[in-house]
Length: 262
Image 1 (cartoon, rainbow, N blue to C red):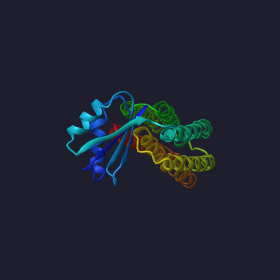
Image 2: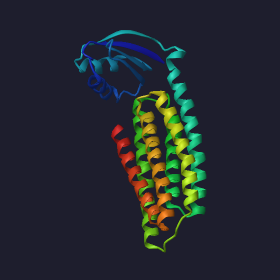
Image 3: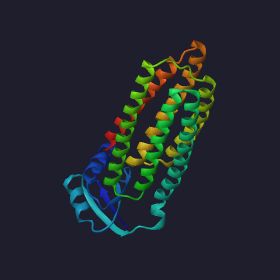
Image 4: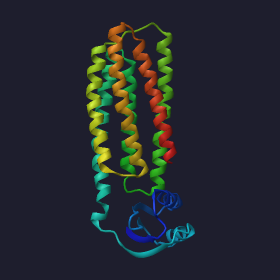
């Protein structure tokens, strides 16, 4: 892989950065873009020739000029290795809590826990395909982010069907203690995942998708804990069904944000 450095004399703020990203998005040979706005420099990591990249930058009329092209060194790819480590860690955490919350949700008859477990499973899928995306082209990363968003939407629809079924059927009061304890542990796990993802400081679409999903999970965990206290106070399963509904609304909101990234 090579890296080519461009000077972009009219790149003064993030708006020009976004314009360049959109212009170069369709070039399949590009692996990564590094922007240095204060120094008006753009480093493009790519394979093959630079002719298509140079032409696209010239068409933007931002004063772009190629400065150099050379082979990328090992330390230039350090970010990709860091992304891989982070994604493996959060993948393991989310899949473990999917199993824990699904089991405890079924045993305690909590729709909130079942819904959250499905969301954790969806996140595991997101991190798995994000691992596949590391080192891929920008275009493939965009497609993977969209795939993750569509997967979340599918789970949300299935979740709403189950919530409606439980609203219509006989009322079941879940075990509030299990709801609170398991969600508290899940909250801690998601806080760790969010810290790891934000620490990577990556702006690439597949990593941004992971941050959005994990931020949603923190909100969901707090909601399930709150509904557990309400179940105990009201002696009713209604708060659990309500939080289950809200979980899937959050999932849809997050999925739509992911689709906008693509």
